[in-house]
Image 1 (cartoon, rainbow, N blue to C red):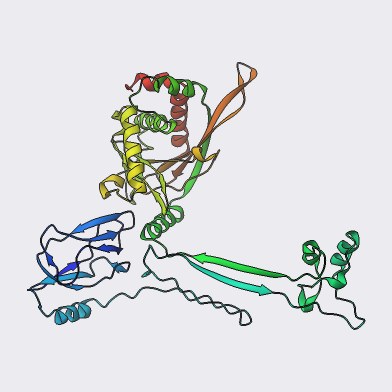
Image 2: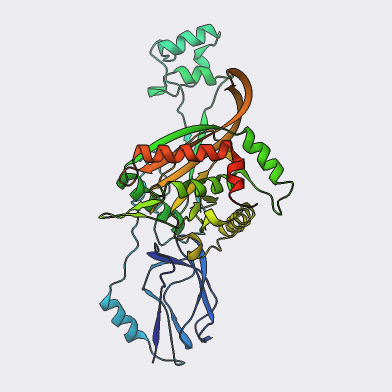
Length: 425
């Protein structure tokens, strides 16, 4: 008897999936464990194996198309088995969900443009569409006395630049010469022709989920922000010494992860999440590391970070970053974070605020290290500083609690010997 294979729920946030590739075609034999298709979820493209056996009789979602979780992905059964009644029966139980379409943009009548409709059923890999509109300005209008119409400001600029406005084609109402026409005038008879263009790209499953989760976080969690500056000179010296003996190269981000993990040990109320009727204080410390990829942001998790060496943290971070860029992260790689770090310092960003990554109560935004003048022992001397901003969910973390955590974190960063003394490299 024919069996339905449904669109799987491959992550906790997945509501729909895109078939990136079919590995079987209608008429092929399917065995349990055979690779059936590649499914693009909101966070990664994952291989989907069949648990059923038989002949592939029907494909419910074409390559590149989107379908909701639990909809018909495919049907397998005996060769030449009729599945029309089965498909019709499923359609009666749950009517197909139509993809929502945005209203096409209606251009002005005098300047028609191609209509573009963005649909959730558009494959994520579809090339961007480019829309082009060419605008040509009409010939200059002339007043009854034979002179072109010129605005007062344009007339003043023309006089200053010794420009004869008679030969300028006006772009204002009725061909009136205005300021920009004078500024754009290059001499002779000017013909203004410009091209307006834009591109529209379909929104990937990952980007949809990022947008939804961050909007929920920003508008449901009352954020407040705490910024602190710390001197990095000792940390820079420590990192250089560490990399002389460490089996892998240790980055500043690795040191920050370790300092955060050790600080959370002393401030467990920051290692928390708001759960409506309760606040969960996590005894384990799982640090999420925000990783930028082409389609958005992924947050793989360094588990039990407080108990790991700097080399272990470095190795895991590099591996996760590579897997994220190749879209090979699995659900277990990005689930379970209790605190998140977002570092834009390597991009030259000195200071920024980040949106809390649910279910965490806090996220740390790390800026770059900057050389500047600092006061030391009452004297102005050259030094290096770094700013970090802690975003807190005020429902779970109070200002004093967040500030105390930052003081401990600052103490570790400015005195790295304490950090290294608590854990081997």
